[in-house]
Length: 203
Image (cartoon, rainbow, N blue to C red; front, side, top):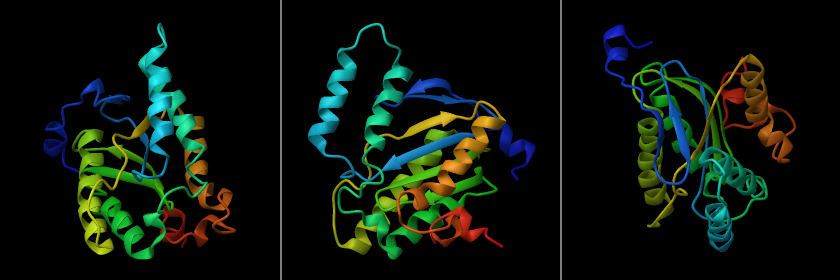
């Protein structure tokens, strides 16, 4: 756990936007985060969905973002795209990035690396959520591209996050992350999926 002095350097951002999605950064908030590979959803669909959302008047940005996230989630477990995260050499890079800052910059609660997207439940401790996700995405993109012998965009722009409202919400998100590989037909029990908190903390 970070010292009080280190925690004091963390200045919460409150509500802010890094592009399309609104985010809430406050000290002590547990956050559910999802982000995806750049090719996990067909680009023509993304463009159409975003255009439709932007044309809606009188609808709050967070409502628009939630709707877009639901549309995108239809492709999460369908295995669209190259599914680079399904390769063990790439999945371990992403999982190691999550584990690297645990207990320092954030408290890592649950995670799951799926073939074309990831889910993480965490509590930022020493820096804003935006900085944490940026570090994850930039470091893993460089390493993954090098391993794969490719170049170009690895992750989809931005990410989707929701702060945890209460204990009921916390348990629902935790259960969703643990069961994601099972529900996608990748394994029979959560602990069988190697790139997850359920597997690493199974003992």
